[in-house]
Structure formats: C-alpha cells, structure tokens
Length: 233
Image 1: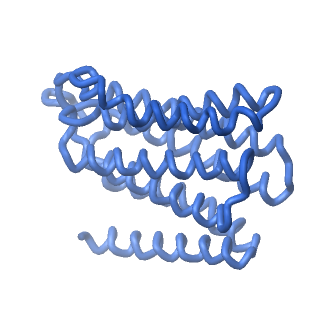
Image 2 (image 1 turned 90 degrees about the vertical axis):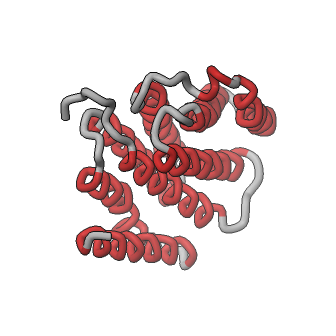
C-alpha cells in the first residue's frame, strides 16, 4: 500500500471511530463535525485511485447524492423534522438510481449479465424486497407509502444490478461492489424498519456502521474496475 493511501486509510478509520462514538454517546457535535466528512473522504480516495476514468462523473454523482441523503437524515434525527427525512430518502433514491445505471451499463466486456444468463438469481433479493414491503406497508400512509415502497424497489434493484456485474468486470471489483450493495440493503432496511415499524436498539449505530461499510466497499470495488479494451482514457 502506498504511503499516501496508508495515511488516508488511517484518517478514515479515525473519522469512522469518532462518528460511531458520537452516536453511542449521543454527542451531536461529533456527528455534525465529522459525519459529513466520511462521504467526502470516500469521493477523494476514489478520485486518487480509480483505474477507470470514463465513469468518474457518474460515480461521483452517486457519492454526492449519498452525501446529501446522509446529511438530511442526520438533520431529521436532530430536529425531528419529517421533511428532512423525506429529502434524505429522496437523495438516497437518486444515489441508488445512479448506482443501478453504473452497474448495468459500465462494464469491462460484452459478456451478458449474470441475471440474463440465470434469472433464478433474482429470486432471493426480490423475495426479500417483497417481504420488507409487506412488513412496512400496514404502517405507512399517504405519500410515505409511495416513497418507501419505491425506495425498497431501488434498494433491491441496486443490489441485483451489482450481482449482475458477475463476469462483466474483474472478480475483485464484482465481489467488493456486491458485498457493499448487501450492506446498503441492510442499512436501508434498518432505517426503514426503525422509522416506520419497530424501534431497534442501537439502530443509529448499526445503520451508520452498515452505511459506511456499504459505501466504502462499493468505492473500493469500483476502483478495481478497468477500462474496456480500446477505450481512450
């Protein structure tokens, strides 16, 4: 590992620990000061290390919407404002849409996606999305019904599109991005269940931990993705 990357990873570890301690100690100041820096760090690390330059703007767009979404969810918890929560959820939805587009159309070769070759791989994640929707639906009302159900579709769709990258990109890129997508599903599910169904002990801590893991793994996986042969950088 380059000295620069080692230093950056130490900084990242410190940021994560401080934010998680802030959540456990219910110290809003630590969260306000350091939590927004996590997605900025992820974007910077990606910029410095990405091998594939042609999808740079798309990846940074996904990071940006995730950053905005996380900030508004943070503000929602601080002020108890539903409007902030809905803006945050909307921003996360835009992030998921961007990820789906990237995972489906940014590849290293012309091999068909895994889900086209074997559609049965759709079933586990689709079944989970249906279960989550049925669990939450009785507790939702008005505009929230459409927002949360649409978010669940995007959440599971993003993970399916990450799974579809199998054999279309190198294995290191695939496994890290798919693992990150599963952490994103866990984080989004915890947030939805805690907000609309049942209070979960240490929910904020677990949501943030899985969210950070998701974004970090997706970023590291996308760093490994290479340009298609003959593509000019």
